Image (cartoon, rainbow, N blue to C red):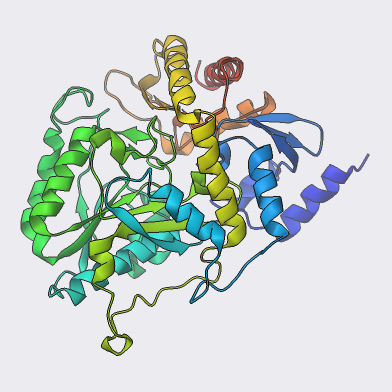
Length: 451
């Protein structure tokens, strides 16, 4: 019998080009049509339940259809849906800035609104370049970034990314980036552990700053967690040392907290683990609880003041997005901050994170193909390798992670691995019974593919 779900699948494949996908794969694994969501669960048109343990690409912070956020957006919808943000403003945008400035690292107090993470990165890069140009350093035209970085898909953001899967084919049109060999705690060249090292791997950054610091406007980093690279976690000490280098060479530190902010690492922002404040911080994803597209590039008064001048001096930051400061998104974002405060979300999540990490270690650590288990906050990652002793990865053509993903879907769990790294990055509200279930499913599926 041809069902409504079948009809929707056919229409989806007829019209839609899905993101980050080889569409030929969809011939075998058809798109799953989601009808509704509640908490950590999604419900498909054909009546199946899925536990969203990857937070729908890391943005769903407080569960699907959170009543408080939903009501906040509904109430705003009856008042104002959108307004041009040049020379106009609205109460929710102002409230959001007022609330955020209280929890952001010290000194971040000027808010540039964009509508997605990549756009926030682009704005931050342009802001940094123009600042140096207007403060007597026009030679500072270059950008630095770490190896294995990921910062988005637009040309500037893609340029500073270092994951070839996303950027290799576009290299002829990308910016020339100064690439720093970043931390790799699993395959540490010093044979150390990131929990007790002194960030000896900062030496690569020191060499690059010494050679290129006078020509560099900014370094863009994902603080503590290189997410798309396989949830690679590194020491806060590295971040502290990087802050010192930026100060020494007058290079802006742009912290891409799009994936790491809002409690994902156990603190409000990953930068908080190192006790440092960047010159520009980019926020998105959890910013609106996964409800609405919105992003921010938040900066200091010092940077802002370099653009503050009579119009005819040509120093204004002429950067704009149609949906900058969208009232619906701002309403959602304000409610997210209220919920985090009222319900002690981050504190409770951190307590649950201890249970989650221990559970994963107990289940996976002895398997012959589990090379590394790493965690921070509720983020947990399991790197699968062909040879545990040598840390040799599987042949990427085998698509081990993808095979595990497909099996997990049959058991109602959305894993969506990063290569052969199985990871969990659930909404902060996930409870222990769901943790038990998803870990057991992941282990069973792994054994089915690599027994």
